[in-house]
Image 1: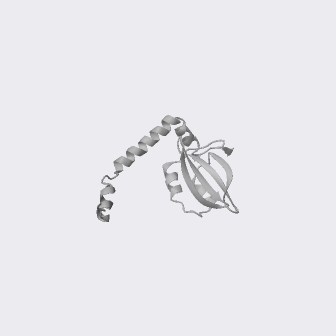
Image 2: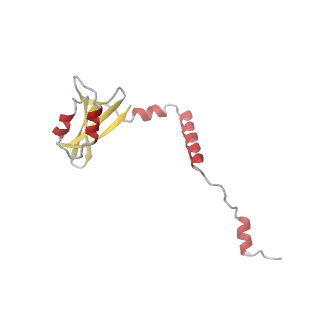
Image 3: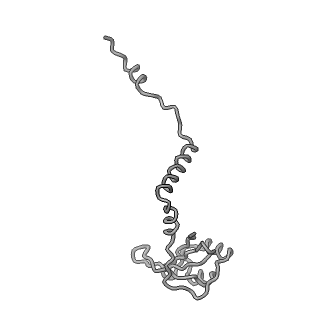
Length: 139
């Protein structure tokens, strides 16, 4: 009985993988998985949209204006740490106030909501008398 050499055994029993996964394959797989998720649970898109921002105002303005493009540009270029009064002087009256939020230990954040359109909003956050940032939310 002849014993096969180690080189022959190794190469003959291990299949060579010659196929490569392309970007197109990955995209197709992602679309297929998302389609299955939607078919399995059609309300998945509604849930993700509704949880983007729960606009539960604690104080609502009697009148509000849409944030203009120039105000939006100025807001997005405002540096973190700018005085709250300076930022507020550049913006119209807020649509509403959201409940305070504890972002860091010992720091309470106040949030104001400004309307951009019928379905988009800009949330501006302050800590004390300082501007901390803003975020656009689409509902």
